[in-house]
Length: 524
Image (cartoon, rainbow, N blue to C red; front, top):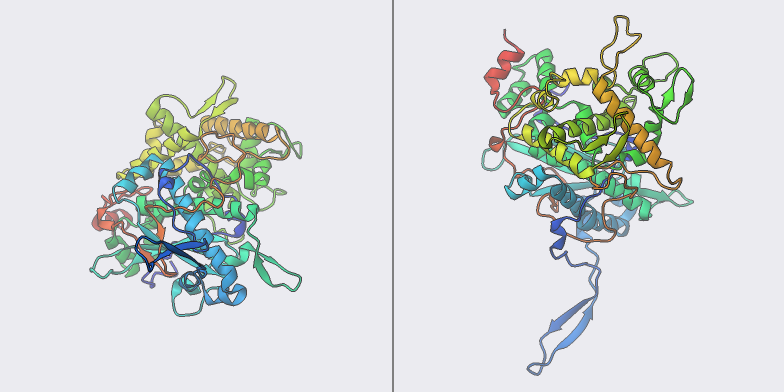
């Protein structure tokens, strides 16, 4: 690994703004919304002052200044120079008082595993916010300088070496590129146009990104790739060779298709990435798009897109998600195929637990109904089992009743099954292929009902058929009990301590100490 000498692992879950445009979600109204919202700093205030005569009440109107201090607390100098305080204070207030706490509450309230964790101090209390404009600040702070231009929002995180009490922990922050939210006047000057489309974009991105944050605390081993700090320091201090390090990370961290696919489940991914989903309906033999997917057509395009001459560079196969994506050629594999894989696993988990499916099919493989609530419960089962110490390998084998032996087996066989010897034909994986053909045809039929709407595809809607564009209530100011935005723009340490976690990653868990891991990874 090129940055092994760095004492921090920057686990930046980010991609081009194209990827982040796919996110959204909605759920039942959060319980936290019943709390009294913070006062609106721009609201006219009626102040009671001391009266000259007893029992005489005198009022006076006072005008509250805008909280410009929040701009200094959260924004880079590049953002201030480009937009100024008046523009930025509007964005900061929108994010800190409405968008972020609403998104936190929806996730905490909609997933049983997160609801339970929130009540047991198993989720972080605070997170920081850094808003920059295309480039961060060159002020000697790594998390300010090394940002992701073009990514509207992302989560940046890594291990703290040592806190004030001498313990080690994990820290994180949310970053926003303000330029991605701007319009430009005739002179090229940027300004905010906070219309419904902009709000929907922010809402959906925050649901997706905050899901990463929840998992950073709840499923930290799989999100970071380290089973404990001893393993982390062994890697950083070069006790592991580059080859052993790569094997350790690969066997511990969750595959990218799962990290991004499960976060996509809480976003309006079908709505925003409809073009990607339509590509799955391309028939290579007919060289045209078809209205209804078939088993043979889908397994062929899924397995061969990007590999076969004349199909371009874009890959759909889950196996491609491990490739370098600097040119964006595995966005579909990571985000869209990953999303469908997570829906399929959620359905398996729910069936295993409850004895009935979340996705109801007839005998011909035609989907009759999809329950967003039951799919959420299925995803929650998967996350909670890994939180308790099971590996992703073990969970996949369990919920599929041994149909897939582990994560690698599932990744290789999803939709396409196994190839023949010369990779000219794949046999298809019967159950996942049937699920995805049914899903794509179901969503296509919903899409055709109204030319002016597109189904969201988010499990945050109990009614999975929803065409709503945002899960949040416009203008609602609220507070959250977890992941409150602190008034700072540098990393903030999670209140969830590493020593209190026993969660599992892909093939290793925190039950596997450094000696066991080193023996498995580097026995000699």
